[in-house]
Length: 633
Image: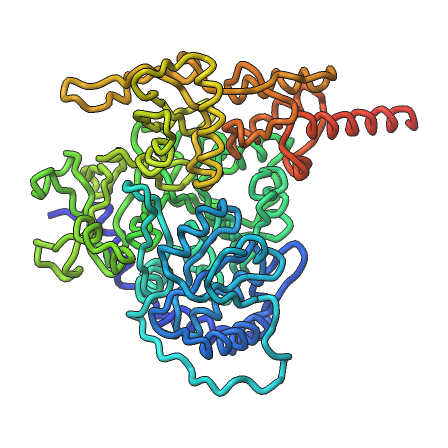
C-alpha cells in the first residue's frame, strides 16, 4: 500500500526525535543557563536579563517558596504583569517543585477571586506594583517576585532542593466552563517537554531564535512561546500589551528585535498583515517561522501576505491544538496552493506521539472522508481537570483501541475529517463551544452570569462577525413574564448587564451587544435555533448612549464609532470597550479615523481613556502640530 503524504511526514519526524537535557522544564532551563550564563534570555522595551541572572533570581525566590511549603504538585498563583518578573516568578515556582496557576492581572476582581478560590492556592507570586489593590481581599500569602529575599551572593536558606519528577504538575491553566465555572486543566512537565522534543525536527529551534511572548500567560499559547525560547537558549521578547494591540508598532518590534519565530492566532495575524500592507514596501523582517494556532485558519486570509512575501520566507505553519492536549496536537505547512481551496481549513497530521481517532455518536470510527468527533490519544493528553472528577470522566475517556498511545482519549468536541492524502481538516464544533480571538468560550458560562439578573428569564450568547474577521459576542435576552422588552426596559437592563459582565468576566467573554426579545426561536426539536436569531441591528438594541458629541471633531469620530460598533448613539465619555468594542474593532476604528483626518495615530494614545473626548483631544493636537509644521515650512 502506498504511503500517504501525512504518514510519510510523521514517519520521517519520528526517526529524528532530539532529547532535551532534562526531564522537567526548570531542569532543562537550568542546564542551558549554566552553559550560556551571559546570553540574553528575556527582553522587554526597558530591560534585558541574561540566562545567568535570570537563573540566579529564580533560585533565590524558589528558596523562599520552599520554606513556605511549596513542593511537588503544590499549586502557586502567578499574578504578574508582562515583565521579566513574570518569568522569574514562573521559574521559581517550578524550581520549588510547584505548579504555576497563571492569573491575568487584567481580569476583573471577581474573576481573580474565583480563580484563587477554585485553585485553592495558599501562596501567590506577584509584584509590588500590582499586588495592591488586585489582591487586597486575598487570604493567600503574597510573595513578591520583584523583591529579592537576599542580595546576590548572600547565603541562601538551607531548604532542601525540591524533588520533582516529570509526572508532577507544571501548570494549571483555566478555560471557560459550561457550568458557569471555569475549569483548570492539569498539565505535567512531561506533557510539555515531549511537545518540543517531538517537534524540533520540523522547526529546528536553537539558540539563534528570537521569540515573542505575544499572548496572555493565561492563554496556553504562551507556554509554547516561553519554553520555545528558554529550552533552547534563545531570546524571549515580552510584548507590552499596548504594542500587542497596535499592529504597526508590533510590526516595528518584529523588525527591531529581529524576531525569528512568531506565533499568532489568525485573527491577530490578519491585523499584522494589514499593517504590513500599509507600508510602501515590505518591512525588513528576520522571521523564519509564523506559527498559527488557537482558532480556525481560513487560508484565503493569507493571500495578501503570500502575494507580498511568498510562503517560504517565513514558512507558514498551522497547528491545531487545545489546552487539554498541551498546546499543539497537529502540524501543517501552509503553501500558496492552499489558497485555491479556501473551503478547507487544513490542520495536517498529528504530532508523532499522538494519535487521532474520528468517532461517530456511538463511539465507532468513521470512514475516511466522513466527519467525526476528534478524539486524541498520547502523552500530550492532560491529567484531567482540577477537582472536577465528573467532568474529567466525561471528557477523558477510556481508550478502547488497545494501541501504544495511552489508556485514555480526550474528547475534543471538534468535528474533523481525514482527507485522501492522510491529512486532517477542521470543520467546526460538535457542541455550542465557540472561539473568539483564540480563546475557547463556553457560551453557557456567560449566559449563567447574565441570567442572574432578576429581570431575565433566559439568554443565549452567539458570535457575530462584524466584518474583517472582527468576531464579537452578542447576547439575546428574554425578560421574565409580565415584562415587555420595550426601549426603556432595554436601556436600563442593557446597562446593568454590561456592568454585570464587566465585573465578572474577562474582556474576551463580555458580549458586545444585547438584543431584547420576547422569546427565543426554537427548532422542531424544541432547541434554541441560533440560525434564526436576528442580526444585532435588526432587534431592539439595549444600548444607553447619550450621543452628546459637541465639537466638529467629536461629531465626526462619533459617526465612525457608530459604524464600527453598530450603535445608534455614542456618548463622548463612554468607553469604547464598555460599548462592546474589541481589540480588532479598535484597530479598524483607528484605521478609519486616520484616513478621515489624515493623521497617523495609534491606539496607544488612548491610554488615558478609550473615549471620543480623549481621541478628539489627540486628533486636535495632531492637526495643530501638522499646521504648525506647514507654517514653519
